[in-house]
Image (cartoon, rainbow, N blue to C red; front, top):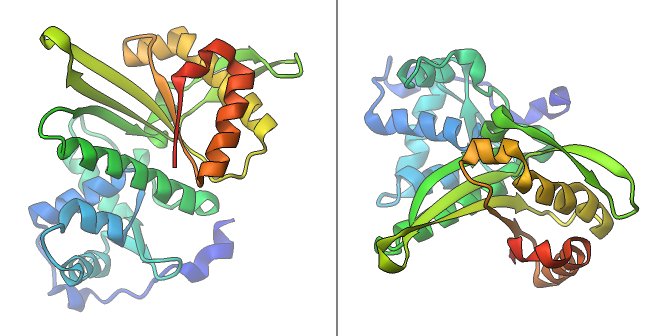
Length: 267
């Protein structure tokens, strides 16, 4: 499929535009690490939000251009500007990683077929992180993982569909985030949120059979408990409209019954 999208990619590099062999700054290194940490691809606007909040968009564009021309980043000019690591960029991040990660563990291409979905998932995670950071210390992000990270500990669960048929599925949320806060008496409270970004492409029945029912079983599984240290968690579905939200909530209530309480929805 990648060959169908090669016209998206800007291959023309001019190393001289990066002032010869550029020395990577700490911010440059963080940019490369952000792209890796947030699933392998980021838009220019997302990088701006992460590293250039107090400067102009021009400063972000210039720095990304230099990283591109020196071969650390690949980029696309279509569907908005977005960036991913080249092999050289992946090698730079791998060399700095704790535990000596190898370059083969890094993603070199966006997942073209679901690029917009992946970028929306990053938007959701960034919004939650920024909200916690602005909470005055009341909320703190303890851990967050993207879909690619969650594949490492993927668990297959068995469940019964709405039609009564037995099925099995590997459950992988789009992202995971744990938010901590101090509860009554100073005891910490951990909110483990399994994020599902819904693009309104799944019919309600398929959403119940492919997402809700296996998602409930996964929370009960030993694999989930082993990975996250507790058999507790909640699903957070981020969807496209209030109307779609109402449809999904009704679907979950019918499919999950009393267990529907662990499903949360927002737009």
